[in-house]
Image 1 (cartoon, rainbow, N blue to C red):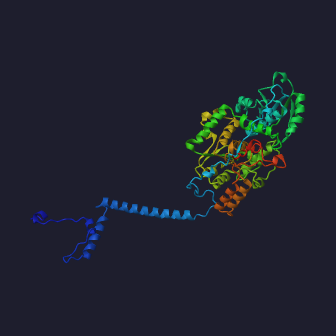
Image 2: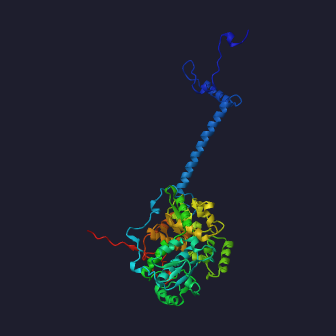
Image 3: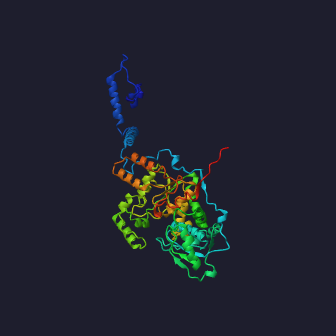
Length: 532
């Protein structure tokens, strides 16, 4: 007979291995048979561990174990990270984990400190309007230097022409400075606006009239930082005698202070209103500003004057290699009109007379609580040194220039025209939400003064001497980051563009520059309203 269960009338069943762990079988007395239960469990485990027979279940169990282990490890790592981050004390490392990126943005860091107590006061008195029927002669001028040195010099020459009741021929621009830009006055400035804007003060001509075209000009290098009387008395005598006078320089021809109010007002009118850039420069500059400010965003214009010419001129070489420092030294000795040759760059830096390095600028911005996602627009030329902007970009990655804000086609008309590119930077700096300059050069002075004139727009004037001292102390672990940042902010409470009267000194070169701060002179305090 067959031994088949079907033929014997009994049924054999195979219990699922998992059933053994779902319940424990009781014996006839209702008690749990532990021995049988243990044997069934071990039998089930052994069955489960046979991959050949139960492959899918074995894989499922392994995956579950891996997932649980991974979650456990993640929890441990997160816990450790939070503990390390909470106890971090290495505040001396500039490239540490972000401190302020998660902080709520502080609106105070963007706020202007202007006041409705002040207003522009450059309107001319009617008695000061020129007599258009007469002129004492004609002035030819060579505007020397870069863009902003030429602008301030031209403004001085407008005032000089007014003092002598002379006609001013459109200035000739410097083509021999560091950048050797071949641009003429009409290429950079709106000459028609310049002439029209000044017509009630002086006559502006494109060229000498035929009556004096053949007259040999009297060539003169006027004395620097002169009082008004020098021109209205001494130089006027020469002009009347020769009819045409040619000034070889225009920079710093008038003193900062001790000038008649009407002349000071005219200097501001010329600098901030009459000298307007050409239409093509103004249009592209406005486009670039709008691109930075799209969706209501804000940006800082950073005048990072860490450029080859400025470093060579000042003798500053902090953060550069020995080879780079030697390259700058050779350039300084090669440039004849730079009088100072042997310079101790370390001493100049300690005195606060060097441009900030990119690293110093980044640390300064961080100490002033600008978050790492802040837009930074560099309004300067190429940064010198093999590391370039690396230290700044590691902390503030949103860095822009006119070259990456504009298209190649938009910039094509300005290529190799460095003064025209500088004019684009000037527009970007003027209309920035914050302007920070790292060296008090001609552009810094011009933009700062213009922003003050416009209503005390936020402009940060770093106290570099104290800042250098503090950053060196922090690097030498004498200050923690928090101690350093608190002191930096404290130093600059009154250095962010609020109304402060121009500082007068014993020597013109040591005074605060008139074009850097036209208050007093072109900005006035509103008279108090009488109470009814």
